[in-house]
Image (tube, rainbow, N blue to C red; front, side):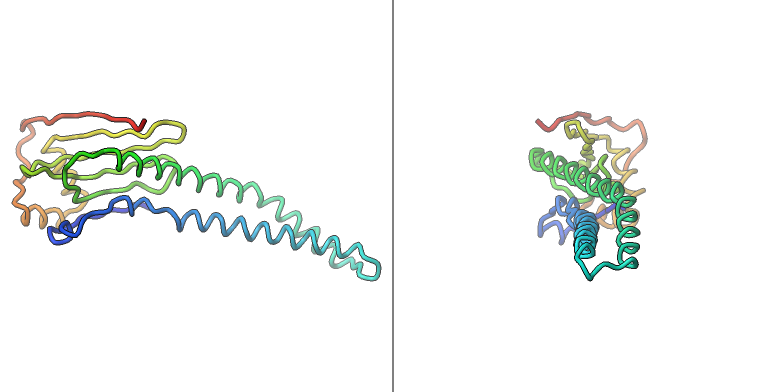
Length: 199
């Protein structure tokens, strides 16, 4: 799943909170819910097995049921564990991106973003505009076990072509509202490229 967003001039006046797009609580909740159900079934099966040892309560049918459930739980345990580890890795990547977003005080106005699928390798692209209506794209990446990093791409042609491809009519409407000039020929001034890493 990926998320995109572009805001009009009126919405920009209210402020943009792109970090809200990195809220992965629902994904981690799903993984924790699976783990809780698995744990509850484990405890329930253990309790039934222990009760079945009591004199007068032993039942061959209950033994068979407990054995089947125990086998199923043993087979699904690796998948539940992997789901939890995946959710933790995704959350760690999102936190790295959030930290880099807060650290990156570029002073320009963000007006559009595209967030990759919620995976341990995450990429967030934010389009920003300066006071002179100059558009650039800031790409934030997070990879498990590595520092998050930022790449700034200020090429007008590339930035505007990307915005038109991703946002289409919404971008054209915003460009008209803001008076942003259309992208020019490919030979137009190449902007600065830079990278930064989260310490």
